[in-house]
Image (cartoon, rainbow, N blue to C red; front, side):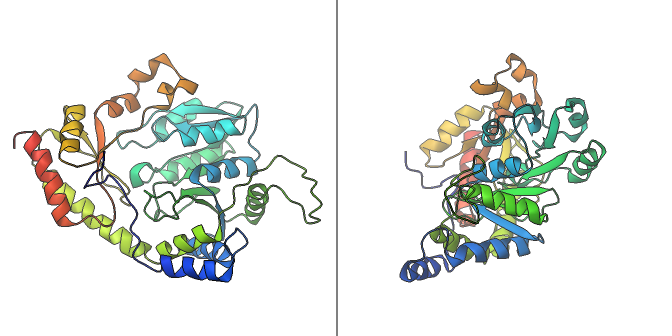
Length: 351
């Protein structure tokens, strides 16, 4: 089905085409091109972090961060119940075990439950800033210090939230606040970690380039073409974040009188505008008929076939999954678009 009002889409209004055209004209289209280094440097600087390591996806970024921190078989990583499955899969890719922590009422990992999940095998805490809502990083970092654990921020949905962990991992997929189509980037202040992640993403090729690879690694590189798009997007990020703040405020005002809609807590940056809705599935079907695409909430990790736990329905994450949806949220959304969407939600509930 084609929707007039899409749940998400890229907003390509800057120098993306200019930079891609220059990359093609130069012949530098692979990972060795100059836009890769430029994007890494400028994204790190924007976030107040020393090093950026670009890669092929947000999932790849998480995998690189875990591997660089030495996570492997026998280790455990604390992962939120409420997240996209890539957060857990990245742990499984390393041979380690994800241990799930339920969410609070803001959908983020409940920091009060973290300590009860720590065992002698725990190595990393992986908070996820869900829908652009920042986790309680002060508490998480304090717990990590007390138990000598490392922290990886899954910032896939939170461009503009400043990192504080050992590594922060961003997705640059087409529905994110800024995009390269496909792609990701790891940020860290630790130069050794940055070097190790860059080494692992490029097949662990040694300085001799003798085709002897001393460890299992990946082809997770970002191309110069992707980096050209990402750089054009990065130059507009403050404008994008401001436009999205206004989109959030407009939805807040327009949906405030609809009693069947429960607005979620404010977001530090707006990735997706999330709500709880009575008769959620009926509402989604009605909106689809009106050419409005919606997005249901993530399923709990404990409901996933790979990690199934029959007690998933008793979790806070399970309760939110049953009622949650995201309305169209992208940087190019206009007030007229929002008026139509809000009006159709009101119409469904007989307002």
